[in-house]
Length: 252
Image 1 (cartoon, rainbow, N blue to C red):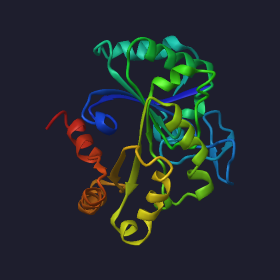
Image 2 (image 1 turned 90 degrees about the vertical axis):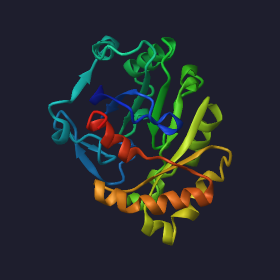
Image 3 (image 1 turned 180 degrees about the vertical axis):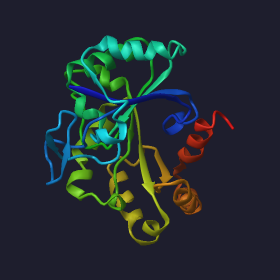
């Protein structure tokens, strides 16, 4: 079953498309539910599943009134049409890990429909799973925001870092970029070496960084350090926080 947690129209965008109005679809699903790592979450039907990716994953308590079970493509098309947006609006697919649905029939039909109708599709992915590019070649036409998790996420390295998946996506996709979430304490200690290890796989892939934080004050406390880090390394600073504030206040 394909679970849609929420959908919204936003100027957040992704990567170099930040600031470009996009239609977001946030899907429920865990990062690597097939592997588990000992953690469990309650699925919408009340059963326990393994391997939840935390924040926007399978926690129905946070999104109960928005949670939708998607059984056919037409439901997603109706949602899109309800926004009355330009015919080729950018579409961002996000969630715990949207690519866990990469082989699901309805999800496959949706991606094929979007790309076939001229939409620029961006996956915000943890880069721990790669689509089947040979079976579904239209996945090559999408953009991939490789939001690879670092040690400051608190997750075990075997869960958050899959070099084979990163290599497969970068090798096959038309466009992709790394996106790291960093904070001042981790920059002082160890996080830069982790980033170097990851980007060394494909050194010509663009790198975006955004400040870590659970709330506005925490994020803003890390902004200056992250900006200086980006200047020093030649990375691109991604100011998603203030764009989100701008968006939530309807441009104010």
